[in-house]
Length: 274
Ligand code: PEP
Ligand code: MN
Image (cartoon, rainbow, N blue to C red; front, top):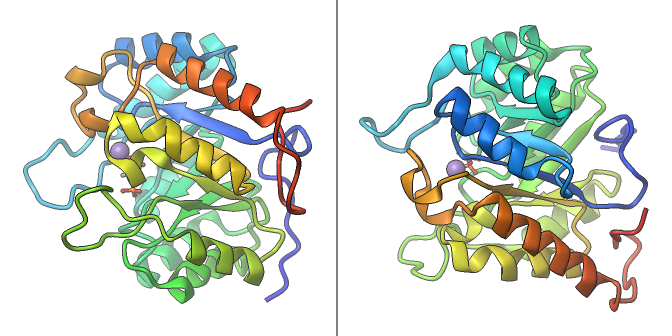
């Protein structure tokens, strides 16, 4: 399918990678604001926070739910950062739209479910909201493309993909094994679609966030989505992979410096200039 897409966000600087950062989960108004204050004005474009958390097994922290939408709005009010959250069903999509969330993403467990994606697409039909589609948990390129097509066919034009790795039984290095070749095949199939890398969910641990980010940038990814928490050790979800805003800022500075020495090698190579 040939897709005519619009820029992910209306004022996105041409060619500069988009940086989305924030906690895995919204936990409290203070945790949100403290994290956002540490990120604002230091290279982050969009503040992320999960409000409904799709846990693989019941009993884990399942998110603060609807009331946390107001906390996202407060972050935007105070810092001016755009906001993003995950929607896993039609009801989430309705509530997030009503609350004015700027960017939605569809998680890896949801993008593996055509019924759920279709229901979300029906709610969002004709809206101008950007939607990012994470790769499904299984290494199925067609399922990933199918989820993106369902949104496109309902009139959404600000679309992007997120490579967050794929579940592999027994992999002890990564939480979710990266398949750079699957993302490259997606690029070949849908050349105008921005692809963002999620080093946090690929790596699953803090030490892997910087090298994976560097790798994604050198491969010409259009952006990064990185989990950042004001007190990572105390995080209610994904504590092992979250980094402080200070660490994230240093990482972005390093990437920017590294990038100035790298000559563009492919048409999609983005740069930190501008
Ligand atoms: C998340 O971004 O916090 C999340 C739940 O991601 P994924 O769908 O990639 O597991
Ligand atoms: Mn997470």
